[in-house]
Length: 217
Ligand SMILES: Nc1ncnc2c1ncn2[C@@H]1O[C@H](COP(=O)(O)OP(=O)(O)OP(=O)(O)O)[C@@H](O)[C@H]1O
Image 1: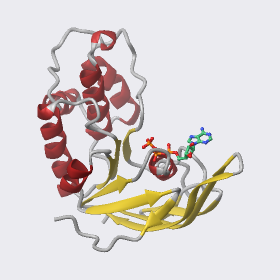
Image 2 (image 1 turned 45 degrees about the vertical axis):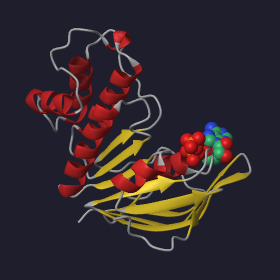
Image 3 (image 1 turned 90 degrees about the horizontal axis):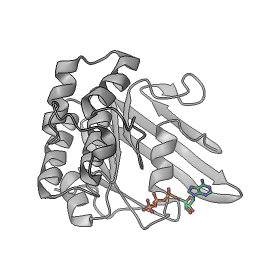
Image 4 (image 1 turned 135 degrees about the horizontal axis):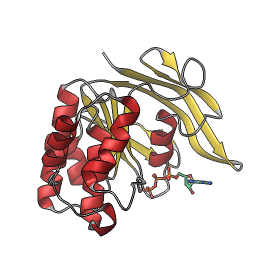
């Protein structure tokens, strides 16, 4: 089973402690919902799990391998954090094909299928620069989930989405967790977050807030 073990994680940036003594055990087959005010540390925690920032103290171990020791980045992770950089002059399909060519884990038919699942037409001839905000967001989600990674991290996936987009994200997350991924999401709509998550992880000022009950359903 996919696991993420976070022990005594600390992160200081320019003297400020943005993550403080975080201890978490995360398992595949579950969606973990990060809850917290602006600036509480949700994105920092996601960045740390992706190997995008180095901890000041403590450890993050993914499937038995410690980040910064045995591995620099998780071997298999799909990420949507802030604005992904796509090539403006390419279509959605072409953009994803370029990304998929790095790992060679998926073929074009699978990319097309992912695009359809998130409500984008794989044969849309418009280039990324002509995409609406919601379409850009959808493409970012497609990029994060297309490779069926061990870990799927989506920061504010439904931010710019309409109701149909939100529904598609729900379906996609369900699929990702059912195939055994550790899914971590952040969302400011607490009702939606409760609905999407198996467990809520609340962060306040860089610390985990103990929850009365871990189960959302
Ligand atoms: N590049 C940076 N340099 C210094 N401090 C930073 C940097 N990026 C973030 N921080 C600080 O780290 C803390 C946590 O920020 P983070 O982005 O993780 O919050 P968040 O919970 O994701 O907020 P939001 O809900 O607004 O997305 C904040 O106090 C922020 O000011």
